Length: 390
Length: 125
Image (cartoon, rainbow over all chains, first blue to last red; front, side, top):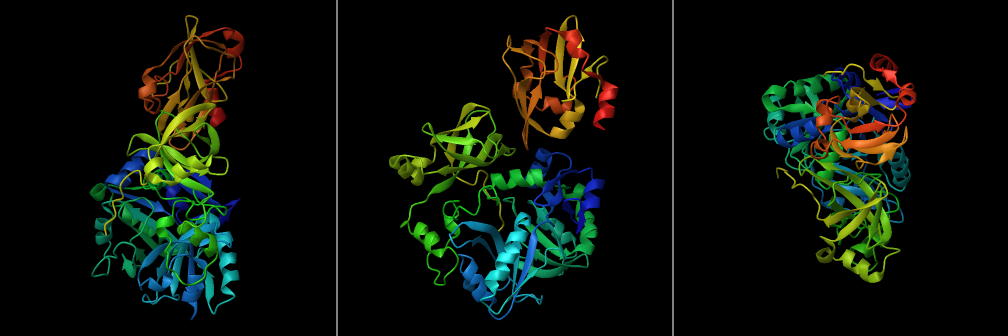
């Protein structure tokens, strides 16, 4: 990592420039938004394989005899059931149940690294998450170690990802299965290899020391003619995750919105005994004892316009929220997005209908696009079926 | 890519080509390169009029929407209907994919504030 002006550079900055990437600021980093074109990169990932520099993401080691108790107190998920070598998608609530971040926690007790748990957090939230976790950790015999500057991270995603991993002299009898992690070497580079990603495709994330970044990046891209792998920028990363119905912090998730309100209820266990930040409201909403104040919906535009982040949303003529993400879907050939509908100003019968998927799915709402109300239909997520190999 | 002889460019990245009192308006290759994949374009109605530097169209790439400004005042004679269903033609050749044909109302004066292509290229690079 190197600080230049306001933005940091990943260890792959020079490689991005060599490939002719268009660079943009993102979450405090100077990152490639596209190389050859967003649609081409998007489609290559769905059909063959895409390689993403995700070194901007934050990595955290959790270590100490009360590691488990600490994690139990900061996420709604039950970490006691997380087996060694396995991963779980989690949220980091504040005391009011709003989200400070979303993250993936890996149990790495079996991996002979200097941690009990390994956490991957959003780049834009490193400076918020780390002090928060350190403060929370004071109640426990545990260490929170920010490893974000030590590691680079690549995501290799798409149906051909597994064949490329096989080519890299991987020293494993078996590659990690979906949502698990292994410690190994790829072409003699020591790595943590996980079967995770942010595209809805089968694929891997690879964490390793910065000094190996260019070597591993170029080695994987050398399989372009054999396996169709291309470098992919943040532009296609966004359309891929949106099609897969995956939320992005700062858009679908924020400090005022609970996991239930962000449509992440599926990930919240009902029966976790331990206390955690925000549990009171999160559980009351999960058990339907407390109403949702707002709710995230997926939509497909009926009109040809594209709804963008921040555009106003109207339900039965009442201004009731805003678009959180919106883009053309290269896979569907339609314009898709997420919107947050605020229940505060809506009549109670309309809120009841919105809360009932049988009534809300298919409902037509309006989105204001350049002073014109355009129709959109509420729909199920994901927009494009996930292609995970489980 | 074929740069038509005699085009003039604006600071906001539109090009114009005048012929027999009518003007074709499009987006420069530099602007299109910055946009990336064009996925949607909203064009004005024929017979509507715009003053110089007024927004007359919106172009959307995968990432964002951008406004397009009228480089010369006038009335829209024709819009390039082909682009409505095939906006990617703008990426393929920004100089054959003109957006609108305009009957200019004050061409000489408006054109005086535009640049020749080579000067425009120097400005953006």
